[in-house]
Length: 216
Image 1 (cartoon, rainbow, N blue to C red):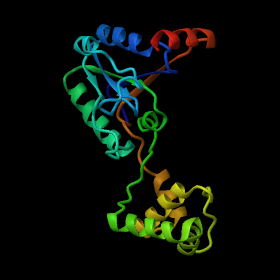
Image 2 (image 1 turned 60 degrees about the vertical axis):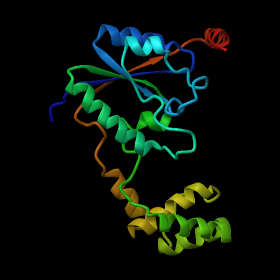
Image 3 (image 1 turned 180 degrees about the horizontal axis):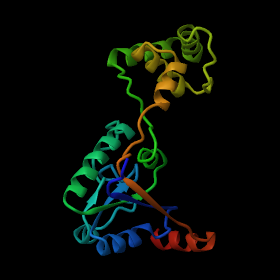
């Protein structure tokens, strides 16, 4: 399959100079910027995310900033849906897009599947939460073991959030974990119609320390 336009990615550790380079590159390449920072999506979280200034946003169109408020339950599935819309809109205008940042799960969502297609209802979430509240990890494991007919769970048995998520998806799909994993591996690669180029900025520890002190 022939690839369409290229998506560009710029990553690097905090204070590595991503923002300055991103602005310069975007201006020189008729591009817009999509933030891939899981903190920058929240309104009011300006200091912790080093958001671009108003002047910088006037120079280059930015996306992925101030999308919601803390406590809204924004997750990678919503970010992926938002990003798909941004990509389509930007390239329909004949422009390029530079994805900047690198909150692990958010960045990963551009390159490989990170969410399944199982619909978990509020009723199922309530049922599983009540089970955990009443019986703890032991109750979750008992139901998972029963549902999966003795198959190895291949889960961290001490991590309640992993167990809750696994049980929710078993109940929501009616499938065993092994079947869910098989289906997940068969999901299409996100943005498969686009080429992808990545750049990673790195600096020495001394240089990073100096730059972080300047920012704070």
